[in-house]
Amino acid sequence: MPKLILLWLAGGGLRLTMLALPPVLPLIHQNLQLDETAVGALSGLPVLLLGLAAIPGSRLIVGIGARRAVIGGLLVIAGASALRGFGPSEPILFAMTFLMGVGVAVIQPALPSLVAAWFPSSPGLATAVYANGLIIAEIASASLTIPLVLPLVQGSWPMSFVVWSLPVFATAVLISVLTPHEPRDNAAPKGPWWPSWGDSKLWQIGLLQGGSGSMYFGSNAFIPDYLTTVGRDDLIAICLTLLNSAQLPASFLLVLFARRLVGRKGPLIIVSLSAFMGLACILAPLTWSLVLGSAMIGFAGGFMLVSALALPPMLASREHVHRLSAGMLAIGYTASFIVPLIAGHVWDLTHNAAMAFIPVAVAAIVVLIMALTLPSVGRRGTD
Image (cartoon, rainbow, N blue to C red; front, side, top):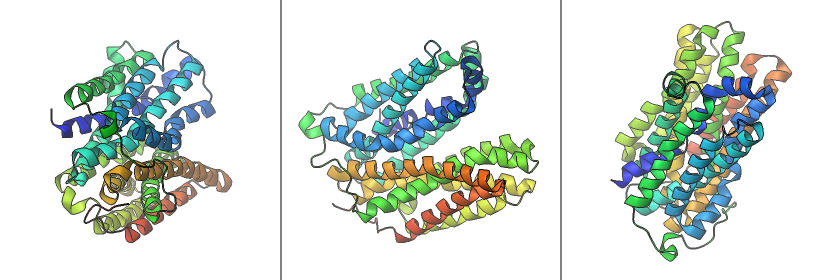
């Protein structure tokens, strides 16, 4: 099996089980009598862990190598996700969600290291491929759980988690069987694992990824309530569908034209500006503008995500990719967790739904600034 397919499957493993949660949250809420704070914590915990556990993930890569880290992370994700519904029990649900988030966080910096090792001459294409798998997994688990998986398991939300864990487990087995085992001395990158926080490149790509994540998670969080306040709750389903599914054409575009688009300043600047246009459309509460704005933000978010993920193997030498990736993810996902919280607080303070999008707009400005100041990636950098 070509390594590109295995990368695509591994990318899917990053999100398949995470996005299986929102469709069954009403069932969990009712079954376990969770309050809204617990529901919010359950939804945000994996995102926070993506930031907090990225640096320990870098340390693991140095110890055992990127391939073993990916296999181990996938097994942790599959096992922990399947056990989330054991009981059912609220403590087990939160403990296994925590462990699943740690598994995802380990894989995130390991995949760019695999890209650098397996595809040194085409890191942009390889990154676009695994990011495409990530986005398709998001859409699949979010959209197929209710119409397909729940009927298959007689409406059992614990068993739905087991079903979505099976492809992740199978991916770990395939990578283990179909890729060569390397001696530990050769598999693990040499040198330090701690991110170089004084490196300007780290902050540039970290803030780029954080800005795009803040736009995506912030828009997902506030578009439904915003539409309700402006009397357009009838558009919630289509706007959320477009916000998430518009990432897919962006990822396919980057797969097809990776060498021309990935890591280039021009396309990132254009997409950043289009994100502002999308926000402006959202704030003009017309049917066409709300729908168009949601799609534009989703497309911009998907394009920025793939571009940010591709930069570590393009900017750093192979032995330093994991450090740059881990630092980027720590900055990016911490921002993606914090900015929506700030946006919600702004809404509470002002009692104005539109004000919640100001932090999202600031995130878009940050992305534009980072795109303008990115170093040249015409060739792989060295550290």
